[in-house]
Image (tube, rainbow, N blue to C red; front, side, top):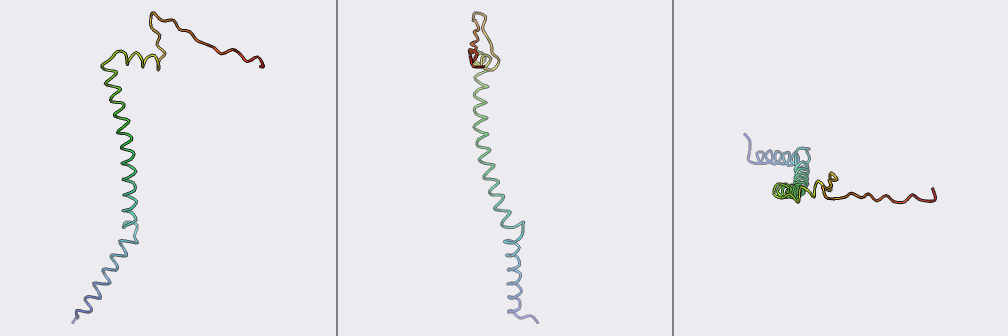
Length: 98
């Protein structure tokens, strides 16, 4: 009934239809390219976050092990002044033209 030639033609048409679906549909090759770009962008972001986390881990270890690091942090962030220290605030002179 069907000859081999017709079977090859039908298989060729089916193959072309599948190729068109692969290349032209929104779920095909274009989506794969977009996903690859998103993965590459996420890897860059993850690496920057990994570096930041390592820095924060080192700071936590430093704060846990030494009093000097905690005192330095209190001085810079909270304005700590020691008991034997005197605080001087230098105020710039007012501009004479005002």
